[in-house]
Length: 480
Ligand SMILES: Nc1ncnc2c1ncn2[C@@H]1O[C@H](COP(=O)(O)OP(=O)(O)OP(=O)(O)O)[C@@H](O)[C@H]1O
Image (cartoon, rainbow, N blue to C red; front, side, top):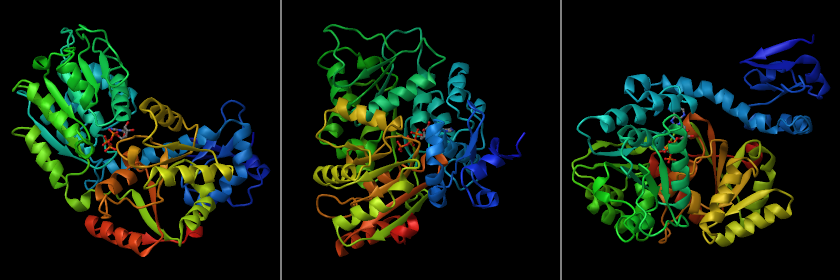
């Protein structure tokens, strides 16, 4: 029997360590997660800390591939961060902090089962604070803000499922999402959370889901995009809006950034009964979002963050200086090995740059996915699905998927171009949404901003000022 080191439930065999050609002392990797292959009883080491593991990972990559362990390696990142989440949940300053358990939130047993099956141990701050308000009798309206990836979706999904009367076979909860992809994603959470509550059914009011004229929906929960939901309520009459008990507006900031969505949402809201509970969630609350929120949610409870609380400390932010687009590309190639240990998203300002970058990376032999606005929504959803499954490690995109998309393995976000609005001013909300694709629910994340001109440096300075957050500079080779 070889000597086995046990580090946090996972094993490493000493003889294999040497065989893999690892000259480094084991102690150097003390804090790392180590994984073993259960199938062939061999083992290999995986490292959770992204940055100082690159060389090591390169060395063991062939071994991992041989034993189909690449996916487990990514999982090992998650194993370690479970501890991180638990630590954060005990820190009163963290958005994941909670004093209550899910039991204390008085959820239905079927939902409690669903929550635990999803691997949630404790609620986050937003879940702990918002759920009692949302579940109170009589129902209360709520406008709520919480940082990206802190469990807002899970919070309102639990509220909706708690309010459904499964005996009544008609739509009772209506959730409006700003995009097709987000509607699908939230729908998945509803399906997972409601897994042990099969009497409650869900239907998607999204483009492509064509129902026969005269259909009267029996599903109790409807999730969709504003245009289709409006049609289903008004023109096609699949939904009787007067019977809706809970109305959720998710990602309100994204909603109002999209032409026509604000108007459609208000028209839907006007058809709902006065007694309907209105819930509005957003990660950012600029004045425009506030005005919209107050118009749509009468007499609300409000949960709001201070500006300096909006960014998450678990996401480390840096910037690197390059002199041109080509230099940015070269810099990206240099750290490619590091960013593909887990998954990365690269944001560009235009479809043209995104297309160019994805093409260049592919020419260099890197396997990347491209997601941009001109693609059909179904095509976009398929790209996201492949990325979520880890089939591609790098997703090059524009703002089209900056917001709301939840892929937990994303550990690096790169702003190939900094986000600016149409007047050339910093787009702070988009910045927050983009970097929020990493650091999901307490996981560590890295955001790298590529600065290639005085103009972009000025944008970055203004972003730092806005969030009162100092962003450090780094040399690209140091990042590697
Ligand atoms: N209590 C919990 N315990 C563990 N994981 C959780 C918990 N609540 C949510 N999560 C997980 O955290 C991740 C982020 O949650 P969610 O998508 O609900 O965040 P969000 O605040 O809606 O994010 P965004 O602002 O980007 O839309 C998801 O993968 C979700 O499964």
